Length: 295
Image 1 (cartoon, rainbow, N blue to C red):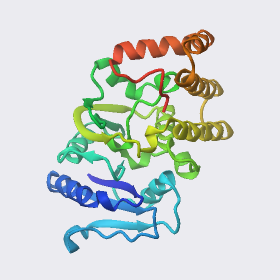
Image 2 (image 1 turned 60 degrees about the vertical axis):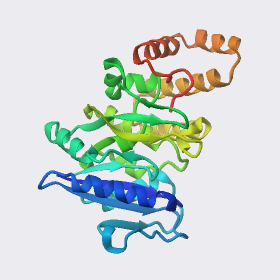
Image 3 (image 1 turned 180 degrees about the vertical axis):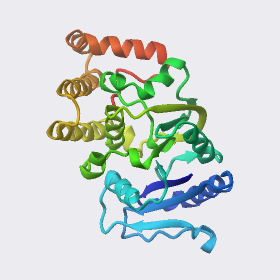
Image 4 (image 1 turned 90 degrees about the horizontal axis):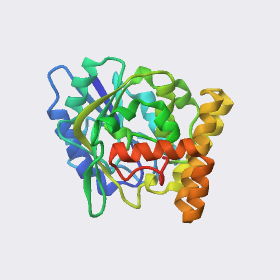
């Protein structure tokens, strides 16, 4: 199997040494007959991408956007040039274990046509924790209802190996102009099309969660989600009821983050179904996620 790793690059010179070394480690651990293709999409075209080590990393392809186009457009540009049967969208500052691609390929061969989702480590400034800790939480990666009532269940597409042929046409055609939630849109469309999600219970992906991450800014990700909600309605890509539920969940989470105690109680009484879904999720997943974040 050939896998294409697609990475939007934006003024990421500080990450290049580690990124290239990480890809080299994964490439060297592949089983005979498997291949790794790496595409860096330069979304800061005013800054030339210079890979370390001269010819050592000549197998990494660099694609140039003609101008800054954003994360979603850069991912789609890479997808259009990818030669792999499966793709993995990796951010420039994230990390994969040295055996990650090999392990994901093995799982993909056992579950053809499925999205493979590995366990992940969430690394913050002072803490490092395994993300999926309970059987219940691991099952939610493929539960569309949870995405609508609680929020996104995958930290990053960097922990996912996706069959290229399964990437929805709508996701490649309607580009989110606002960065932050194009991955949420991708999961919703895949789940709506009933593509299976298979959990690989190994922490192969490390997400560096810092103030620099777009995903750390709920206002940014919410704005991106509201943008794709309008698009989903326009394209009739999901049932109207699902779109209304997701929009209501985002508003509920925003009110919960910013409201007083009385305000949180009032919003919960107005949305008892969302309140119940988030209580159950928080108790059964044993994570800090719930109530405060939707995407």
